[in-house]
Structure formats: C-alpha cells, structure tokens
Image (cartoon, helix red, strand yellow):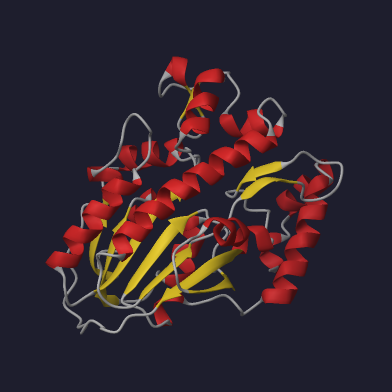
Amino acid sequence: MLERYTIGNLKKLFNNPGYIGWEIQRLLFDLKYSGNAIDVMKKDWDNLIVVDACRFDYFEKHNEIRGDLSSVISHGGSSWEFMQGNFVGQEFHDTVYVTGNPHTGKLSDDLFHAIDPLYLNAWDEEHETVLPEQVVDAALDAYEEFPDKRLIVHFMQPHRPYLGETAKELQQDHNISGFNRNLAYGNETSDTASFSTLIENGEISIRKARKAYEETLDIVLEQVETLINSLSGKTVVSADHGEMLGEKIIPATKPKFGHSDEYIRNEILYRVPWLEIPADERREVKSDPPITFDRGGSEVVEERLRSLGYK
C-alpha cells in the first residue's frame, strides 16, 4: 500500500482535495474487507456466468432467475483487476472462457484450455459492444464443442454502452455513441462532452441514466436465463465488479458514474451478486492442453476498449 504514496500521487491529493476523501474511503474499505474477496475459480460450479459492471443491489431488484442469491466481495473494481485477482498467473486447463471483454487480450495462452474472444469475432459496430444474444450463441457452441470443460461466459452488459429504448433516446438527444464518443465524429476525438461527462455535469439526469442501466440489465438477464436453461450442470451468475450510478464519494463533489477510476474503492464497486442455481446432473470435467487463441492486434483491442470507456 505504501507504494501508492509517491510524490506524484501526494501532489494529486493536495491539488484535488476530493481525492483525500476518496483515499480515506479506500483505506476504510481495505481495512474492512482485506482478504475477503471471493476466488471464483475455487468455487463449485460447472458454468460461471459473468455480467459486466453489475452491482448487487440492482441485480437483487431485477433478477427473476430462481436460485440461492447472496452478495460477495469481488477481487476487482474493474474488469482487468477482476481478471488479475482470479486468473492471472494460474492454470485452468479444465475451463473454457467465452468473453466479450477486450481486457481478455492481456491474458496468456496457457491460462485456460480455450478462450473465445467475442470482442473480435462478434463485435456489433452499431452498438459498439458485443450484444448478449451473440454471447449466448457462442456459449452454446462452446458447450457443445467442449462438453468436458467448465465454462465461463462473460457478458458485456449492463456495462455501457447501454441498450434499450432509454439508451437510444440518450444517444440521439445528446449526439453520442458507444461509451464516450460523439456520433458526428465517429471514432475521431472531438471536443464534445462524453456520455459520462454529460451525466456528471447534470446535462443527463441521474434518473434517466439509471433507467438506461436498469433496462440494459433486464435485457442481459433475459439472455442469461435463456442460456442457463440450455446448459447442464451447476450454474453460478455473478459479476466482475459493480458500477457507480450517480453517487457522491464525499459530500459537495460531483456524482460519479462508471468504475475505471483507480482511486475509487468502495462497496458499490466491489460488492457483486453470487446466484447459485443447483443441478441434479453435474458434468464430468477434465484438463487438456491449452489452445492458442487470437487475441487481436493492439489497435483493434485499443479501439474496443475505447468504445467501452476504458481509454
């Protein structure tokens, strides 16, 4: 922890007093939950379904999938931190990872038996994300191709860019696309405020932004249930991390949206759902040598990450 307190970071704290409140919150969180993060790969499941940026309270409110629901502390407040805490430096040759998340490109070839990088082969240019129905199709293909492997399926929703009617209204009303980019300029940088900046500045209401998030969550959960009904074995539904949806870290500061800020560490971002769906039949799983996967060129991956707001 002491490596955080460099001269450069201390200057940031004094130049922006709000960071001091963030750091206090971070320290309190670490004091309370240090060592309590769940190690998803050590848990008992045949299928692990990950919904991206899904906080526990909203999942609890919207979920209609039957099972035993609890909340757990994730290793990550962002996707890459989640992957680092659960995957990096280990070997899971009995597992296949079907994923829409571009951070997967940072993983090594010898980590899983196989990885299907949907951010390369199922990317939807119009919505600038991987749509949930595409994830379902790819997951079922993997389930048939690898019947003796554990299966991780990583949906990109309810992570922005949002889906649904409210999302369409917001994108058109404010001339924006993807996570942070302007429709009029396509993929080029423009001076027009980003989606997240419009929210934090009050030009998009917190109420409407949350409605778009909830509609996106409903859309992905419908597809998750479709997938669960087609899989054998025990399934768990969880999330890599949560999402700030207009909460203030400390009083008298702007509301925060998103999750990628390295200075924020709190229960909203790290408390995630853990829904266990029991099964009468379990799969017989075995390990096999890993299959090299196409992680995509750096330019493509960077572009996908920008669409999702990571760059």
